[in-house]
Amino acid sequence: MSDEPIDTKTRTDQERIVDARMRLRERFFARMASTPSMADDKPLGEGAPNRHGMPRLPQGQYETKKWPVLDLGRQPHVPLETWTLELKGACKRPQTLKWADFMALEQVSDTSDFHCVTTWSKFDMAWQGVRFSELAALADVDERVTHVMTYGYDGYTTNLPLVEALKPDVLLVHTANGAPLSVEHGGPLRMITPQLYAWKGAKWIKAIEFLLVDRKGFWEERGYSNTAYPWREDRYG
Image (cartoon, rainbow, N blue to C red; front, top):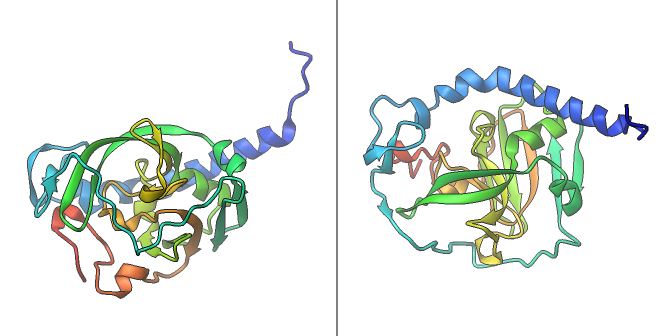
């Protein structure tokens, strides 16, 4: 047996997060599987099936090898030394993470496609970051939570249902295709939502709010769809 002391607090925190994550999975697993991006019986698109059985290219989209840049006209530079991510709203453990705190969470790699509402799609992007579900478990979200709002350092906001945010390919990413996420693409950290149009993931993310009722974000207030399902060409409300 090792003589090294056991970090009881760290072990307890890790166990609590795992337990919260499993409870979220149990509550939302069946609902995730029945969402339109995974269970639509008449998806709109073409090409071989993607990772979830939908057509690889949603209707109205074209494939690009480039990664176009879209923003609100501002690209904030946020040094890692001052960057923070606030977890707030209807949760039992609201908190503010510094970069070292974020990087101490479970880091995962995932490959997914990226669909922009402006009609381009970029396939097989390799990401590294932290699953949204890990952050939801860390904050220990209230059982009544139905939606989340994410906030960017550029003033951007966007909403999405918790059942979509908890999907395993929804990440807060710091690395794209093997390189640190550039400022123009939302670095140091952005959220990705591969099963929805990409505007549902905030760039330069600085806060996540857990909501008991839905609330529209920047583009949703300006007529964009509240649900944003690519395989229903669900662009506008």
